[in-house]
Image 1 (cartoon, rainbow, N blue to C red):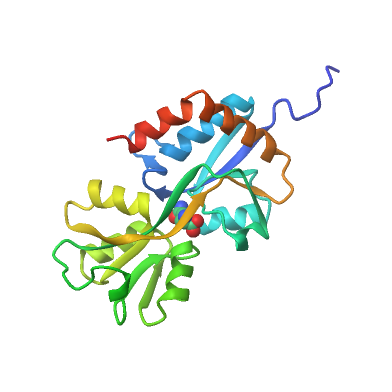
Image 2 (cartoon, rainbow, N blue to C red; image 1 turned 90 degrees about the horizontal axis):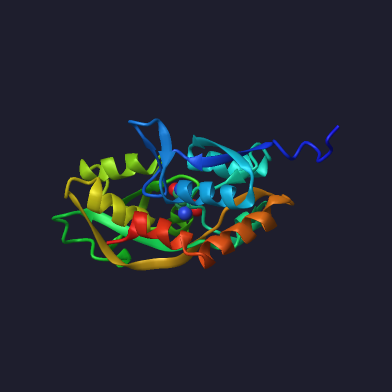
Length: 231
Ligand code: GLN
């Protein structure tokens, strides 16, 4: 009887997206999930003194996994929205993002979101881009996929005319994974901020916010940022 309750050696489950470069993706060689979010949540867990176990899934599974309280924490480049806040709790914002368009390198027709009427625009289901397209571009033909890589593949093969997605993901994919076949166009659309997600009423929110602030103050957040986004 040492007391302390069962929280002492509890392992908290962390739900993440199975592919959202460079925030979370599988390193095929090590079999480990890596990326900005993965480094951040591991550093937060260290700082807060909690054990975590990471499980990856489709993005919409992370959202529903919070709502059903199936997982304790969700980190998946998840945008803080008023609608999600009705069913999910969020940490303080930890990353400023937004939306952006990608097209084939030689495309001269689509220069911005003003040129999307009658075009096929691919994105991922259950995301802020899907909502943005439906709200702002009813005259575009929106095609959704469970994974964003499938949307980029369809763009590279010419089955769709554009992809709309999160700025850091579009920029990273275009620069590193598109074999030079794609380019970004237009301005950043709709400012967004990412937050770490929790089931409503979670007791972890304060501890995670405190740990996040410590990492920002002591420079560890900057080191992780530099590793994934530095020039
Ligand atoms: N930021 C987007 C959203 O929250 C997409 C995130 C992702 O694909 N992991 O809807």
